[in-house]
Length: 86
Image (cartoon, rainbow, N blue to C red; front, side, top):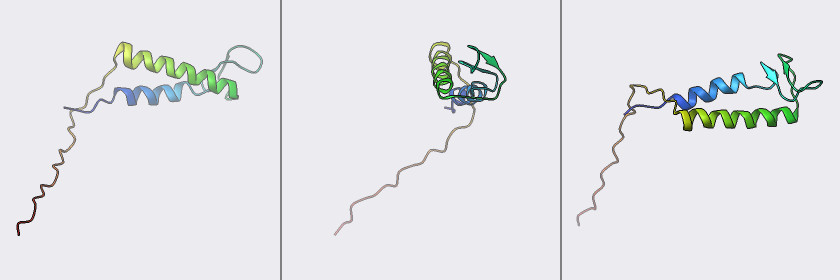
């Protein structure tokens, strides 16, 4: 049993790449799409959030990206309590 790092890695990479204005911005100020303008707007944030959700869902659920690590979390045993004998 290992930890599945796939969803976390995909989320971080997509968050960086889909930041409005970093690579592209939809909708832009003057055109529909502008590339590398480093500006943003409220509607652009909503459009990029919708794109993020759609692409993330497709990659994680439909494609099934999984990155398994060999690390096993430590198993914590619950303390065993017994009733006192009187």
